[in-house]
Image (tube, rainbow, N blue to C red; front, side, top):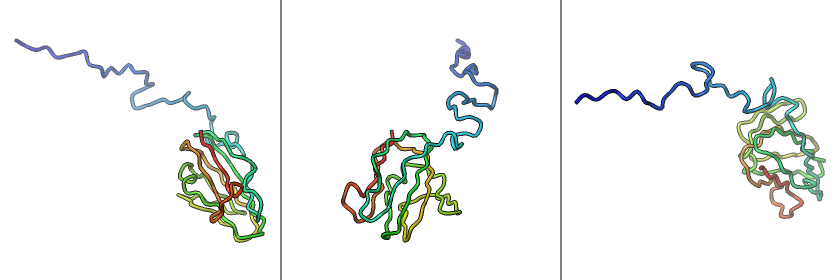
Length: 151
């Protein structure tokens, strides 16, 4: 008895692809011509403050995974202070940190420390949902941290 080849396979080429070798993902994201990191897609967050005896943030931040954000960190120079938060920095993708006229594009960050008065601007894409904190090392008060809720 001869066995006929099975022509009924599930590997049909009619799966909605535009052309051979092309995987069209248009319509999934509507970021415009410049993509996710375009200025019009960025949201500016309320600044963080590093000052002796002052709260770091005025309230908790609620941000969306996949959103592009920019936050300014301002140190008044009253004390040498840092913001540390390895878990937060691993939950985001950092586009750049701008200090003065210098733009830094790091692979990873654990903390940002100010020895004197200054400003740093951090632009990033939130990636991993969860609750994260940036806090002043050695501090124990709730006002000495910034809480980020990534949804």
